[in-house]
Image (cartoon, rainbow, N blue to C red; front, side):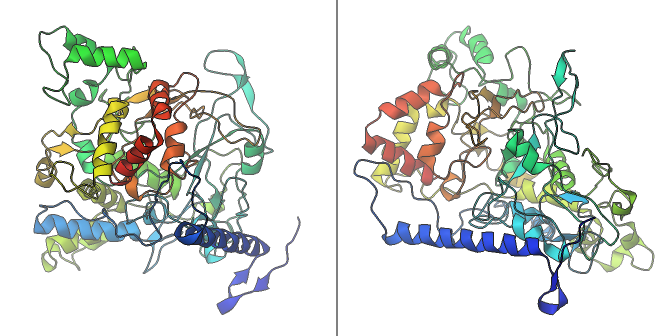
Length: 547
């Protein structure tokens, strides 16, 4: 066994050589970020005739992150308690200032670490906290991972094909009976708790991340923003299905049937012609449907619409991203080629559940208010769910329905959005059904800019450096195939730094152009965008940044 020398750091903490590499990387990344910001403020002007994007600065005034308007006093108290849990740092065995259950394998150690920009519930910010979490509490992880960057988006890694502990593909009969590589698709966490001061005795290596990347076996995902998800949960299945080509064709057979999303604006038959001309289909409604395996209702959360509910969405993330077992996923993940040692199973499972000790006769419920009892007894999983359900949707910078509220370029960009048919998939609004939370129902519509359907987004070989060239990620998830993704909601786009499922686009023009690829349902729309005069392209980008 090779022993590495280490030094004692500040306050007696262990300074591992890997810490230095990660710290230097972080410093270089921060310098690059500062240089980019300086350039944007006073550097070289963009080439004449080019489209300019204006992403948010490091400290924007967030137009999201607060509770839904109209919540009751009790609901607001629950929202606050849930937000505190969302911001809490997880440790292995827990403590006065941390939750319990981190690891044994994990990507990050708090929910708001992944979902923190521009406010709690968002997505990646200017500095990626993953390299910092890699060494917290003395952990000895190697943070020099090919696809992990201190100035890049927060990422998780999914393997396309199964690999053994040596980084070789595992061969055998696949689902079709053919011999060859065996599909994987699961998340392989970046880090482990080995070396942490609260994980004594746990010795476990990181997954074969470098080998997987060098063999083109990694598909990256970045965190999706959580703003307004309670509204998305309240959208009925029939509303989502109404936007499919199949359902639209059925509606077109009815005399004078109109587009359900824009009453009076377009007949259903005209929308069918538009879909067919553009090559847009969308699912469910194409033979196989993206439905829950439990109750057959339409799924809607996640990059591939793989999750049915916010509770399931939260439970999966808690278990997969932080390694915390909970009442939905009560077992430690042991999916790696190297089995999980018993010494790394440091807590009874599930690690997050109802705190029955708080209901002990020595601490009677009557001595506490309902909100205090909720905060003390309820597990984090339910709190995460309620935080997302009660989290308000992003607010646009201006209101297009109010005359004169938006600048002329924003109004023109909104028209371009419809003119080139971006709104065919990024449907501006969907009506809500009745919700048990009155503040959700009171919204009436979700102005999400999405149809929540799966669409084929193009497939082609990766680049020589193993980065993706088309949007297909080769991962079949839920009922989504390797080239299919849910239409990403665009509300809040104005305050995002990274776009697309893997965060490869750092500006909106790049994100639009990346929708083009062999077999993509967006090809016709991207072609129309490319034919626009630069002034119209700029108006469109300005409009999207106002959302």
